[in-house]
Length: 247
Image (cartoon, rainbow, N blue to C red; front, side, top):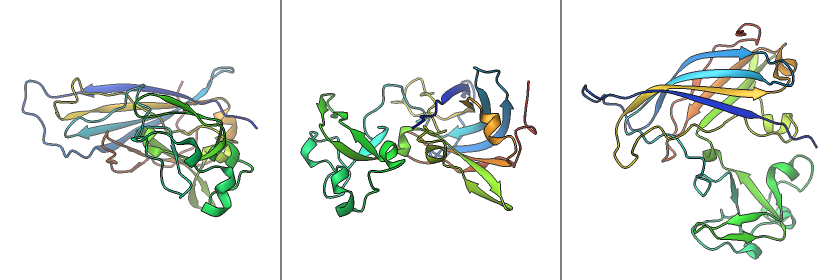
């Protein structure tokens, strides 16, 4: 089964008040759509779909560090045999985690097809909140944690006059997600202060043009702050890759 290779490139433009009175922004982030562009790569270089949004945040608690991989910023969420979310504040108890054999009893997806690579880990090594690693000798169930990423991007395809969500994880054969992370922007998270600026985010995908060149597309985007507060959702105008292609 093919695993899609996805490269996320994030650049930040940031401005904050210094000599002037600080703007009075809400603590929940707000974004505005700026633009979307497409750059055609020359194989083996990837094609790039680039989206830019402007943002405002009243307390500046946006961004994630690359080392932040424990809950609530873990990539995966595990469950116990009662169907409750595994809480990493406590010790990992491998025998208590839901496995593929619990699927029928708990109403979980079956251990088959795409679900094997999208919902089941084989003999994973889990890390407790104190950093201790525990080996689990079984095939355990998980769900992806949306808060692992803070820049959430949903690609939509127009079919029969209506837009539908494109699920890259399943339609690209167990791919990674198009969403990703942007880094911490505040100089000191312990001192809340308003931030504003722009985020330029690129999805780099080999043969993106081959896959979508005949499609009418749209993007829906929002961001999370560090407390898990989502921003408003913005939509791009509908477009084709040829419409937005730049050199």
